[in-house]
Length: 249
Image 1 (spheres, rainbow, N blue to C red):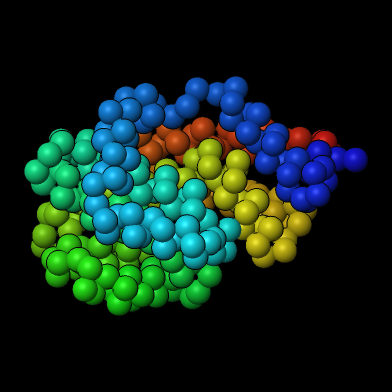
Image 2 (cartoon, rainbow, N blue to C red):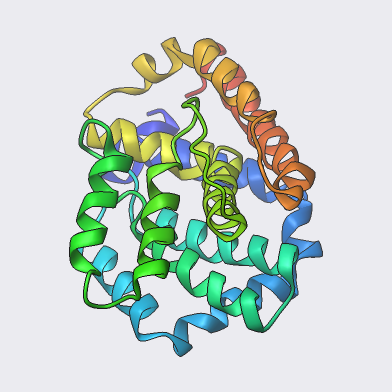
């Protein structure tokens, strides 16, 4: 029996192995250097009814196309931490973090649909029309619309809008690091009923896309720490692929 057939799921074994590989590595430096900002972002959850509403909504809605609650929460909290890193605590920082937390939780609300950023943005505007002020809602919707990789960057002459959108983008692309190989890739394959051989058959093409992400981070914080996430993920993927080629998966 291969590791990938244990525990009733075709991907349980490879998830476990990826977690073991990840556990042997140093966590990305972002988690060490920005611990205070991450804690501050997480603390905002208890201070905003609208953030909690967004959190509960995605928790109730469940995952889409392999992107579930844990993905959304990590993106939300780390996007907030990026904003605190850029602006500091209090004042404008707190206000923008509350907005990006809503955007982070809901950015993949329609992940299983074509043009999912636009569809998610439309639904969030309807849901929050009477819950958020006009400017904050416009900022949240703008950020969600612009979070997709390898698309033309949406631009607007408003520094706050751009910071929220760029923080959301960078936090979402942090997930292309270790998370991609410990969770996301297998969640997506499982949701699409794709087996491991099909995933590994596209490995080299997929790796090229991940490498391209390294040059797309947008905030100063993202440019500093994003490549470290990607490099860590690539190390996990390389070891998994090597084991697969040796018929050990």
